[in-house]
Length: 210
Image (cartoon, rainbow, N blue to C red; front, side, top):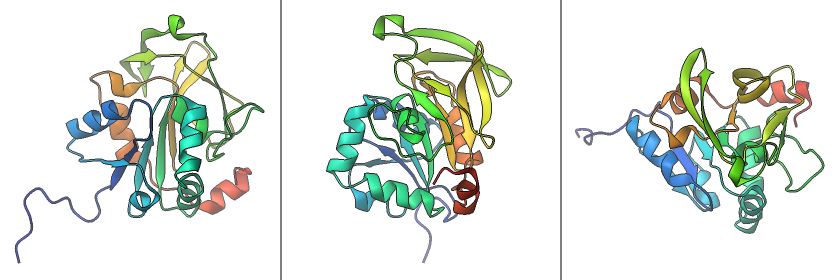
């Protein structure tokens, strides 16, 4: 039997974008520009065979509420901790991936860093800046951006805004305080697909993330 046209090889990433709330559609378009047909994820069963999941920007408290309401919070975290699912969070998604700073919402604690909400001000303080991302210039859009603090030893900084880290990577996790999906440069999404594999639980037990 011949293969279907455009069928991706079994080793290709199986990618989803959390589509409960927030700006998930630009992520889908950016992934499509890379030839990836990503799945909109709204139910726990849709996580079952994914290797990569994007947590988009939006409102972090609402995203947490909906993930819990639709019984996805624990499933998502369990699959990530089992080394089955790599995660990429932007803005609100990055907040959820990190450790708690003592404020709402609860956090997944899958990234050994704290991400503080609205660290640069309100919607009126949003900006677009050209930054060096992995050594190359890139237009970066910040909207009510959070701020990374207290980065753990296994967290690599891939881009900075002044002294502040704005794009970080750790085993199984990529997180940005800006919105790479709102530009026309797919490098960050390509990095997620090609350079971010599900982490090994043992590495995160050593770092105290789990």
